[in-house]
Image 1: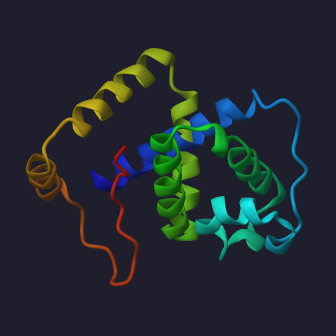
Image 2 (image 1 turned 180 degrees about the vertical axis):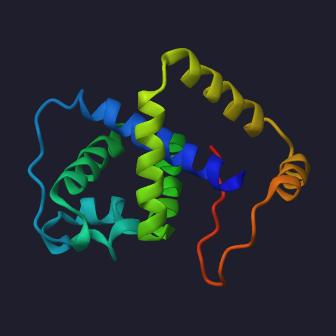
Amino acid sequence: MRAVLAGLSIALLVASGMAEAGSAAAPIAPARDWQQLSPSQRDILAPLGEDWNQLDTERRRKWIELAARYPSMTPDEQSRMRARMSYWASLSQQERIEARERYKRLQAMPPDQREALRKQWEAYESLSPEERKRLGTSTRPAAKAPGAPAATPVRK
């Protein structure tokens, strides 16, 4: 259950980023490597620093667009973006692939099903930590291998 909820959280982050990316005034040329980013971009995108040079051009472009919008975000939005970026950076390559696939499936759903899923997510977020833990233990799949990143949703 936690992995599904974590994937949904990431899918929603990616979806919001993609929706907002379409509203950017002009395309931002991607940097070839981490050192070519401006100091402010490196500061904003710091959670991705270790993996930056392995990202493909399209992913770099999307992250740079998010970084460009970062100064205009509220402090709460900035905090949420950094937390989600850190969570994304903590995922293994396989977990990222799975999250992208969940995002694609989410986008393929009819709007009414997406809305129902969004309401389920909001209901889950409204649970107390104790209720979440109880729910997580009653439906938890087999434990992950030691050292594997935890699949927990990022709170607002």
